Length: 209
Image 1 (cartoon, rainbow, N blue to C red):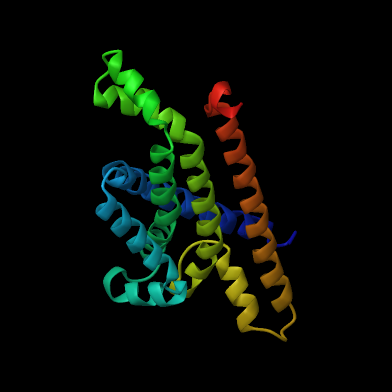
Image 2: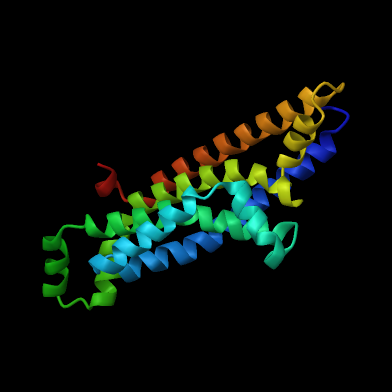
């Protein structure tokens, strides 16, 4: 690890960047989808079912299917991770918005607030703890699945894991696999701590209580 410290750091940075980019894309589409369908039963069920089906597709199979369209490297990795991250974000956005008490929204409308103001000043702040939990779960999913991206020459620590597994019995095979795995676990723990801090800092004390 000392001899390959720079390479490990580079692969870890690639892993983090791939997750952040994918999560950003999934968050935009996931939250937007949740906002559009949370009041529409059929559309809501369809959105959650569709994103759920995507999550059931084996990651290696999905990445392989993307090769003819997106080729190898970063692009299929980002697309796959974004798709896998959608379910917890869409589902938690819907759940968070639906859990806002109707009486609270009616009171806000009675005070003269428009639907847009009710959404952004009442519903989203109250739904935020549930939404960020969805983002937190999506991040952990993306961190783990990103390791499979090495299958399509994607970025990240999966390169070390695949390298180790493909050369089992060789001198440093186990070292490569363990290094990749341990670094992914460390990244996952750091992200989880970060989201816990963000959730605490961005949730009002009244809701936390």
